[in-house]
Length: 216
Image (cartoon, rainbow, N blue to C red; front, top):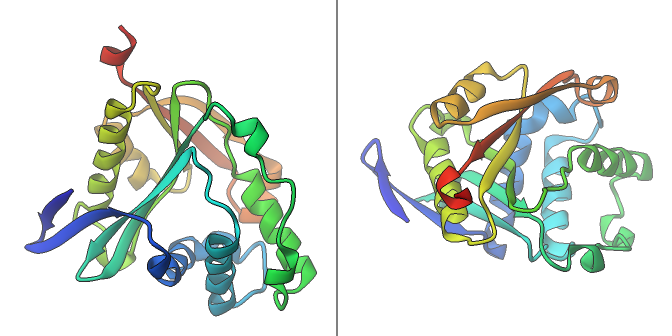
């Protein structure tokens, strides 16, 4: 998928190992405000933590990460997952602890706990957006919309999927407005003391976009 944003060519491409460092940096850059309540790790260590997750954890066959690239630079990313036929049998029963030495066990445990709390198990037919992030220098230029359009196309071309979903923080009304313009509707709202203590994020909206033509 190719397009132009502000006269600069943007390409939406699948994740590759060579982009692990850039994507890791991007995740830290965008989500640093949440992580600072969870860990004392520096930005460099946090980026290395995510890079090691990409390198050492097996890829879930029922998920896909796409990148928005501009001149070889990762300026955005989106990750979606859905329920696969053999997900239960493929669940990872171990964690490669030896590859994560140097982060400190307490920091590592808190990060893994925090990431686990943000996991959502999709229902049958649901394609869940785990994250969609755009580098601050490229926000407001349509990059996020391009990534979401890829997700729309993906659901429409997969016969087993008919719903697109995501969670958005109550502290991010701008993102919620974008999702509403793209026809997402608030399905439910959650308030969590645990999320508040770990991430300083209390309220979350669960938003859903149903593709009615595929359900009929």
